[in-house]
Image 1 (cartoon, helix red, strand yellow):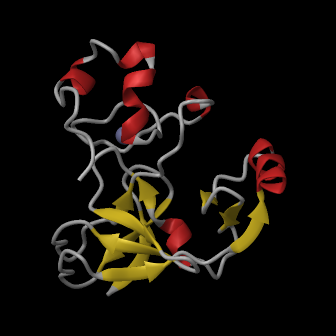
Image 2 (cartoon, rainbow, N blue to C red):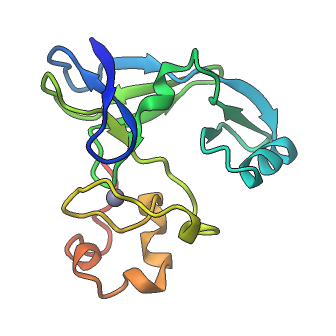
Length: 157
Ligand SMILES: [Zn+2]
C-alpha cells in the first residue's frame, strides 16, 4: 500500500502504491513512550520525531523501524492521526491516489514555531510546521493571503 521515496519538499517521504480509501488505517506510528521531561530534553537536541501522546507522555518515533517517521508534514494534508489508549495510527483523511505523497499536520504548538519553517508547497501553506488551531496565534500570519484565504473557523476536518 505504501513505499518510501524521495519527497518533493523534504528529504524522504511515504507514498501510496495503490488507491487508499478515506478512513483507511495506513500505518502505525511506532515509538518509545517517554516522559514530558525526557521529551523536552530530546526536542532541545533537535529530535523532530517526538509525538504528543497524552498529558503525561510523548512518543519518540525516531527509530528506523518506525516507517511512519517518513510521513512529512503538510499544511493541507491527506492523512490525519488517530490515537487510541495504546496506539497512534496514520489514517487517510480523504481518498488517496497511487503515487501521492502521504502527509499529516504535525500539530506543533506556537511556542517555538520559528524553529520549524514549512516547505510543504501547499497552496495554503502558512510557512511554519504548526497545528491549524494555532495559526491565529502567529502575528506574521495575520493578513497574509495564505492564511486569510481560509478565514476564521474553517480549520480542521
Ligand atoms: Zn506548509
